[in-house]
Length: 332
Image (cartoon, rainbow, N blue to C red):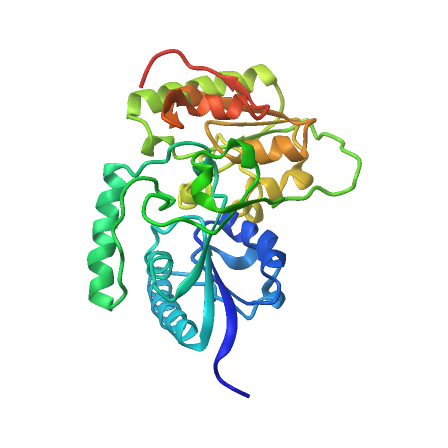
């Protein structure tokens, strides 16, 4: 048996939703050996037995760093072992994902949906560019080349993709830069008859990272009024990047086992009558799967975006997909 093999695909996932998306892509790469590099909690992954290798779950910063170094070494081994290598990732901003995305030996580059990234002109911000400079220098220190790029976060201004996997191909921006475009269904509802529990599920987000303190406070107060008008028991699910936030005694959070999971995966368990958030892309997926659930985006008009060069807001994306948008007066 020769050590050299014909073809493999390397999946890169940075968030719980990315991990779920990868599970929906495996059949598209049938016939190739499949490897998954995840930098998120892998407890929600149910396809470990279908792939040749799945990166281990790391619990703290030291083991995450050690795991990253081992994963980068393993990626180099794969580049040596396989004659043809495909990379499938949400964007090439991650250090290891960037190394593979721009590597000359990779002969196929594929992108999969990451929130609403593919539905507006997601141009790199100054903060993101500064982060890229850090990864560039850090990569140089550990011998992992990080290629700086400009334009869209997805990298389409630096390198064309061969395939793209998204939920709404007709709404993609710059679709011509993505090669073949495929529709994926990442989430599936149970076949049980829907019986609402009457609960309002609030998907909290760290909007203080997007807005100044005054505007963030304004949106939070509006959110409280909207939830009060809907009326019902309120359960709060923090975004995964808020996992270290302490639970205030006046709030009721979802069960601990649900907090690290994508919201889409717990709807069948909680059966809410309404899901309310600021600008979570989970609202889109939940409305698609559960049309009987009221999905509300509060203050999405506060977040300006460009869509194919036209000035709009996140509210325009949501309203076009059946989400109820509650506007908040004033400009950011």
